[in-house]
Image 1 (cartoon, one colour):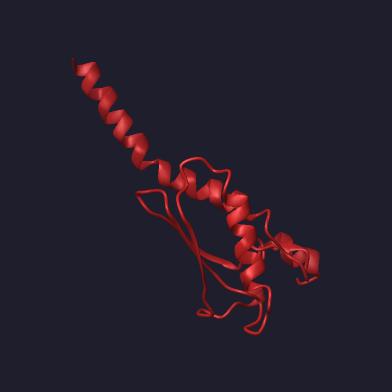
Image 2: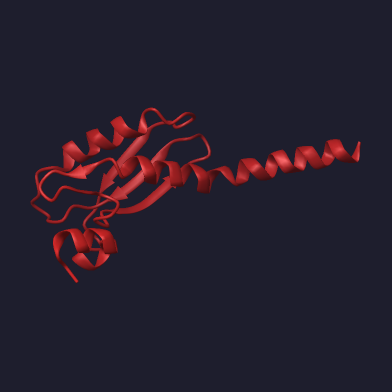
Length: 119
């Protein structure tokens, strides 16, 4: 009986631990979304500010663009939804374009900086 209780506890713990795993799966999928002008994915560019997975599987993604007037926001959001669609147990994907904090090149990964020649 103690084993049954431990198994139930372990199952509950793994449910709680699924959020970081799901967030990483989402982040990996978002690495397939590229800024068409720079040819670098939005994660390495530092454009993905926050990924928040709700208990029901819905996901809120706060992201930015390199410039306020950049017209690719709808394209980026469509690509986010397309690359996240195959992830099992994921609910609604709700991207939210934000401009605070303002994006800057310092937010890029070292790989993105190297690709653009920024050191």
